[in-house]
Length: 194
Image 1 (cartoon, rainbow, N blue to C red):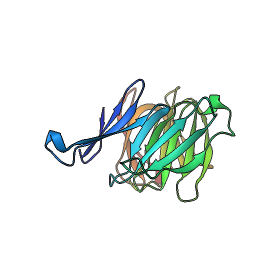
Image 2: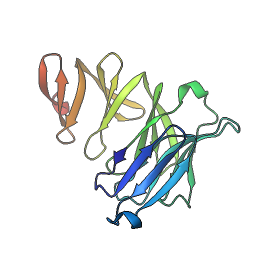
Image 3: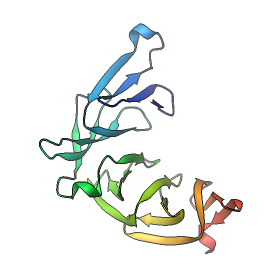
């Protein structure tokens, strides 16, 4: 189970079904559960709780799409169709929405950055991403790969820098400063003073 930041919704991930439980009404008889069905690899709630992004895969038809819908699942909008890509590049991706809600990262064997307004996506240059982190305004993306390397992107096609240390966890303080957990402990880093 994954709670939304405001604790109003819970994403329930099960083997055969994924769904969203609406906790906005606190008494148990008024809560609603919306099943999203099979073929959903991950769900990401928009910050305002009014939209859900999910990756849908149908083995019979070959469809692999990023979909935006409302909580009630009655207004699906296919944002980005992945059917043209080899399934091995993007299978069961994890989703990470930018703080502004304008970009979505899909993490699988590769990382894909989707511009939700333009409805287009582009692969980030790194294979085997483990996790990513957006800066507070979404101006930078920290990508951690399977070698504990940290790559900082300004956009999908602009690798700003590969950091001179290995790290496993980070927290952005603002758009130009971050804290990283390294082998030697906690390390503060200023991107603007390279």
